[in-house]
Amino acid sequence: MVYQRKHDYEYREGWHPSVDANTVGGVMEEIESRNGTITSELFLEASRDESSPTHEVFEWDDGVAAERYRLHQASRTICAIRVIVKEHEEAGKQVRPPRAFVNIVDDDSRKAQYMNVSDALSNEETRYAVLGRAMRELKSFQDKYSALSELAEVFAAIDNVKI
Image (cartoon, rainbow, N blue to C red; front, top):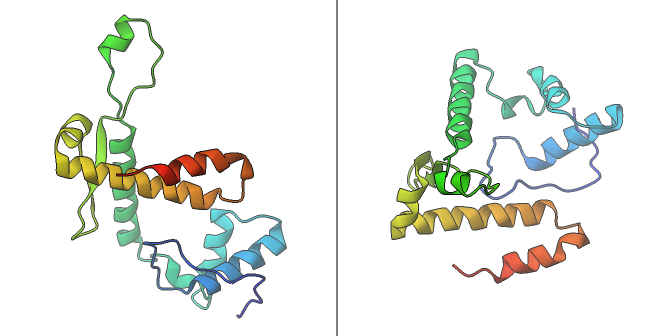
């Protein structure tokens, strides 16, 4: 089925599924027109049939999908661990505990790797990797919310960061 699209689409940098972004966008527009909104469940359901143009976005082998989901859970768990900073606790300060581990991307494999934050920041190479990732995430945030003029000062500050 071919959908009439209102817009042209592309994927964000680094996202390369096997289905054209315009096809995916058209399916999402169709879901929204029928339901008033798009949810992950509605998109999955629209893609379930093998004849769906977005069927190939998903991994349908349950064993492979289950393993990928467990890896996703592992990654989320690593990211959820925080360090309790005793100095702040003793001083009675309310400080959000920092992450214990930070993602260091291996450029060759593109696999996420994690390292203790203090170790990562004390090494020039890994510190630069952490800063690079932080900047990519800030740019992604900027792209996501660029239509909000109320954040113009925040975006200007992001643009002024030099690493």
